[in-house]
Length: 553
Image (cartoon, rainbow, N blue to C red; front, side, top):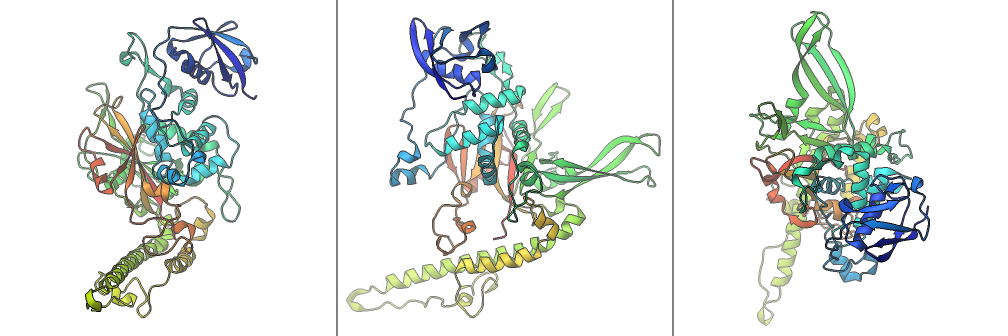
């Protein structure tokens, strides 16, 4: 039903408002707050038979155009307008666009909603998700997420995700929990409780399972939804009884949306924490022994998704104090992660040829990049040196004329380039490498659109927790800058121009910095500071990490 105009009567004044029956009643109450100053928790909107509630079904109310609603409640201070007027991208000139697009927008905190804000920002590191959301007819939370991402891309000011938050609390009532011990400025006033960002990540991911999958280049999605394609792995678990060698092992398979990194007193690195979670000792009833026995459980991934979520298990239940406590231990995480140790032997045999060759190719690409930089620097120096006084020419060392000469002082002399010719355009090398790598990809993996074919990952997003308590503290999101600017039309750092390079190459490979999303505050976070998120205290510690499978090109 299309929106229509209604009247609001409060304190002797009448206000005109738009009512959209397709949106939750809480959205309408928020609009009432904007004109009357009555906070929603103190507001009573009178309808036939009672009071309008946040979850009231508009179909049962049956509002009509021109209808007048009586509002009861004491007004507080009216919400303040933004310090600067909101400007949309279509209203900007070229200079304003360039400045605006340089930094994504933040999300306002609406009272202990940092867990949601950090999660939403981190999930923006999955561009395929936005593609899938935009190409489908959706309802509920996925529809709200699509609208939110669209609104965030059209403004330069921090955005208030009220609609998304309202629907999230309807879909997951847990997130509507109130904490009366930490209320607002009025005595007895309830405030929303802090929630767990990892639980929010999981609930949103589960809600996204209704989003249809993306078709492969061959035009097939194999009947999978988006989450199954790009975010879901498959775990094979094998149980062997330590006390009965003759007992046959049991094997099970399950779908997983994350891998866990257990943190013990000896865990120093993420990889060892993950392996500790995959190989465990468990107690269960033994059918051959007729009693409880110790089993060795070995878990390995039989499918790796394009986006691998790692959960740093930083909160554990403590019986002595009767609540969750945070594990402060410092655990180092890599920006590049080789997940080959996490997979089954069968999958490892399929992935290893591509993984091994891609590692070699990445070293060659790095050497070519160094060569181009040295060559460019030498050419720039020789051109400036030619402008001597009185026409004299200052003698300088000759610039390298071939790739082999230019790379002679590198670690792998000339390894990355052909030995007798100058470097070709980078796109030419990438095209050759892509053909070579694609020929090594196993046919089963080619048919599985959305899986990782090389088990090599780049870290693209982090959600951190700051504080000592599990039910308190503050969550912050971090996203790699290249996620937002990877498709911008700029010159490649290795010399290939945007007009000749393939779309996947339009990345400033030297820019490894990150964006820090602290609710509505967005700032640049240097890559050198990522190690400060390892933990070891009450400051921000990595809690959820999102890794993206490396591209072959």
